[in-house]
Image 1 (cartoon, rainbow, N blue to C red):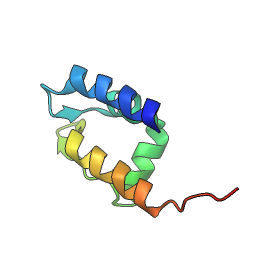
Image 2: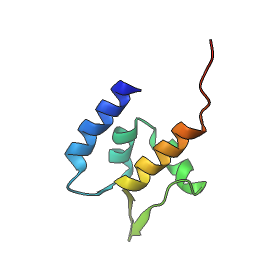
Image 3: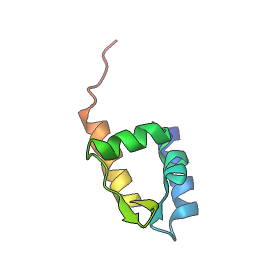
Length: 78
């Protein structure tokens, strides 16, 4: 998880000036596939902004979705 957090911080630094990402950028940012991101939008777990044919996702909304997913996962016991 620590490596994932570091990777996400690097990608965020690249896109931070934008504030919004398209599906391809969001996929790189999260490590999730575009299909998974679209499914999250369809399930209303992720909000998007539609600007004509462009669909943009706010970085803060992505972070909120990822943190909600982290909280729902139960710790594994071995």
